[in-house]
Image 1 (spheres, rainbow, N blue to C red):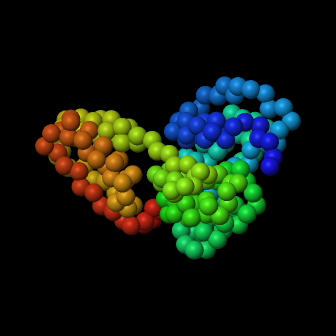
Image 2: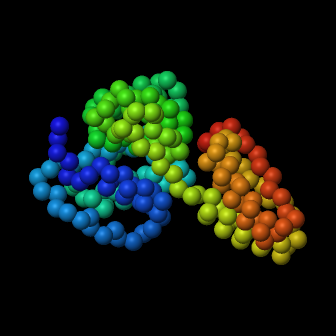
Image 3: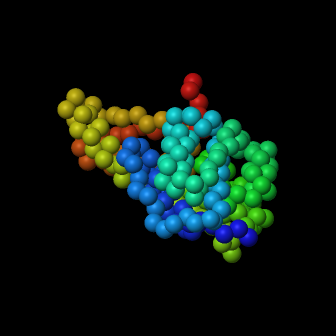
Amino acid sequence: MKRRSISLASLIFTLTVVAAACGDNGTPESPAGEPGEAEPIEVVFVYEKPADTVGWEDAFERARQRIEEHFGEQVVTSFQDRIPDTPEGKAAIQRIAAEGPDLIIGVSFGHGEFLQELAPEFPDVHFMMSQFDPPEGVENFSGYDIAVEDGWYLSGVAAGMVAAEQGHDLAGWIDGFPIPFELRQINGFALGYQESAPDATVRVTFINSWYDPN
């Protein structure tokens, strides 16, 4: 088993911070500790859509780049995109795991169950996925989350102030699927919106797709 230049826990913690603040253009501080001669940690990000798709994939892609900036030669990252939410997609992630990276980061919600199922099969690979809990008895899977509803609450307060000034009482929200992560955002926005415009309502439409320009 190869010696890692930094702890996996340190990388996971840093990734969570970077993913939450990937819009920051500041220069990160150098990590503590000396890399020595250890082999770099190998991290693969898995995207369902093209890596430059504005929104979810693009945010993680910028986070991936920040990880490399932060850790330098201690971490080697790469990405695989256009991996569908289908059995073929699971097989593609399985092939990635078989190549032996230290860490696989799942981005698409549709890949979550794949990573949960593959983790026991590849105990030497760590899997990380937002909004998914580790399977019972599996130690190489990490779930994480952020309080995304807090930001949407503030956005709702601002939007409600504009609506109240202009005499509007209805806001529209278009979303992909009614999963808990999305509902938290919608509820956060609605609560903030009604804080500024108490009689207003938020009308929600789900399009049953994560990416549908039409």
